[in-house]
Length: 562
Image 1 (cartoon, rainbow, N blue to C red):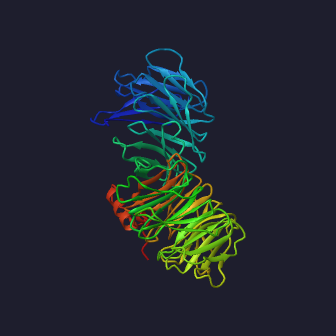
Image 2 (cartoon, rainbow, N blue to C red):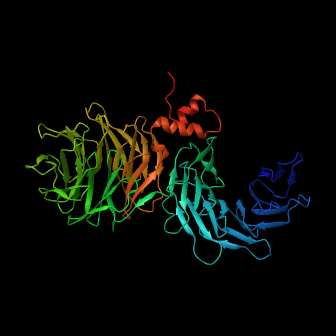
Image 3 (tube, rainbow, N blue to C red):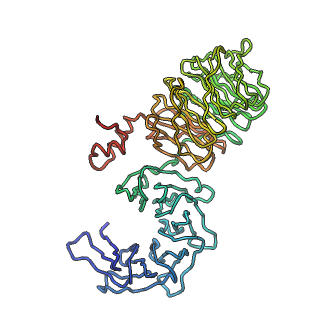
């Protein structure tokens, strides 16, 4: 960059050549505040968008402070302006909502792009000039083809004004900054895929500007909170995709060593991927209806599956041989879990009963009754002595796995409780419910649950990382969210899949393993999902100056000194 332009409330635009010590060029003509300026690609022309409802274009090389062209928006102040990459066209918009595009080589009237229902605050061209994006107070981003009559792609945020937009260097993604939610979204620009963005949280004020690095690997944002932040915008980027299910993949499980992944789907099958390459999965057939839940033993040698066909099946993941077909459920089986010692398997379903079997199906199961509606989630405690069950009756119940005694009944969820998981130390249970909240319960019931809020819709799955310091959740809003289990803070929201996220698990080497409504299983690298000391080390390596104690506490989640 060699030139810098600034606009002022008195209608003046000032341009500096940063390679010399010469005085700046002062450009005049606007009758009020100038809101935005833009350079032509060759740097010769400067355009300003003003409160007087005009866009003025100056030739900074001719020595005149007066504009070459004065272009009127015909109603409302001009808020945004941008040159096309070839310098032929100029786009501008403002308070009257339509976006206008002039051909600077002619005096023809501008093209008018109508659709926004409130002020347009920013416009930007794609690098190849084929698309024009606009950001508006109507809470949408619109991506307009610059040729032809095809309607724009409308990307809806619905949580406040979209203040700014920027294309990635390859034109495949677009970043938007928002006020109201103080978030950044990274959208795909392909129709049918862009409506499910990656959501970046962190700013504590409106996001006024965003810009991609030249290689597209970093995104810079500027906010009203007084900070600039650098983000990795590549998610969902290029996750490893394991496909094969025809129809939704409802469930996914990962072995403790990360070498085995199992999934169950609407196509009645269980699929098992082994090793690092994860090619050619083992396909297990036998169920007569959808497979709703799968579980793996810690070593990955056994997989259990639960189905609408009212059975639980156990398989050898090395050979694919069936080990047991467990009967007894009288209705759909929604959930299945192995005990950590690998000796038992438990299920829960629509018949309101928890059943616990020997893994080889020897003898009758232990039956635990008490729920008053369908059971949706099952989880063993780390020491295999307790089982948690969640239900449509709004309760969570903690049972002795030997079947003796009465369960501990946890109440307080306002609706269906979809899922439960024990923390690695067994002291707490995380649940996800139909109200969109995650609750962290103490197994001694001496304290009220902590509530993590962020999802917009039911939370379908929750899982702790192996060290218990983070929790991953997935829900109806097509997002996975990473939470700090100590503070309850949402660290990251990951979106952009183009399909529902049915279940999420922590995988090996800082990956997330997710099951999706489009039938895929995806493995995505997530640096923020590693141990906190490792995450802090990565963050330290990327800051541009040393952080003080308060900044380290705010941005790196380091505890304050006492």
